[in-house]
Image (tube, rainbow over the protein chains, first blue to last red):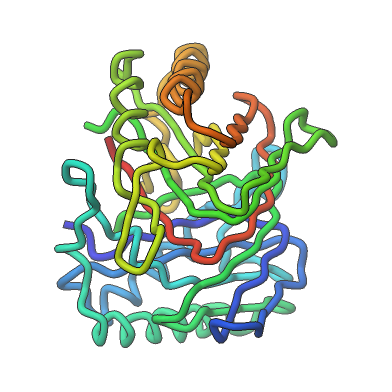
Length: 155
Length: 155
């Protein structure tokens, strides 16, 4: 059983809706990622710390022809974090079921922990912009991508 | 073992780069989905037909407060199909490995079959725009979404 599902998507720019209505936050660096995430039942704070490390330390960002780097090694890089319960769904017949999705209160705590850990791991790097969506809000999103070069982490 | 991975993402609009350079195709209906897809070793044309049915017949589109509909029941709906080998990757230590990804020639055939089946299943519906990326090309993509309300199909 996985503890979390994360989709990582390379972007050149993104705007995320912050307040359900009209407040958008924008990236600035012309390169970055959007991370959609959802947590499964049984996931703990400790798991979240490991998951953040796994994502930010994996060689997932193309920086040259054959060269790949980890997010935590990059300056002037944008990270947009989007809570996204729907990716926890499993198709059964014609409907998505969410038996494995964590309850909302625990999910909120883990989400806040995830965001905090991302900030902490990127401390010391320069010019990075980290934008995190509001848990439970509508996640209005616009993005542009060269790729989109997308990865799924089932961790 | 799954035969394919598909990410379905709700959108209000999208532009997809068709020729690696400057030719973009745009959606028109103000609602639709982007489908990222990759095929795994062992996937056949027959599997692809089943997968298309599964995706287009699943109740994955919110059309009201608690109401969900299948794509194949919708008029004036946009479908953007994006070949996306990178989602077949599996994280091992710090690198993504692609042992399960299908070879390029078979992947191209299955991709073309997938696109054809989507067109065929949407025949008779009105006002739908179907845009499919060119296999092997850079998939430049821009999109806007209210959600983004995203699903993973592991089929």
